[in-house]
Length: 108
Image 1 (cartoon, rainbow, N blue to C red):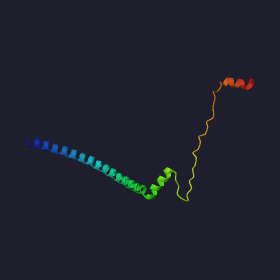
Image 2: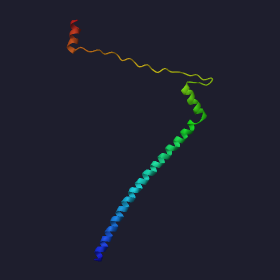
Image 3: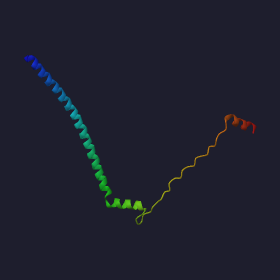
Image 4: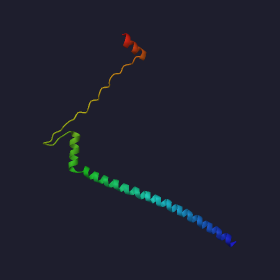
């Protein structure tokens, strides 16, 4: 009776250990993935902060306003390049049947 009770408790402990080890590996992979996502988010945040600072400088604000309103500073020249016109497509009319083309080539 004692051996049976000991085996049942031992089986219960082994199953619990196996389940806990599986959960541990699953949680470590989740932790690594979350850590990687955090690092990339911090890099993106840093680059956006630098971009925000450069866009808030007085020179950048003035440049953007001048470009939107097509203004120039003193001693500057504006060059306006026209957009290229689309090339016309050739007209291809309906074609004759091949035997009519041969007839018109030799007999007309």
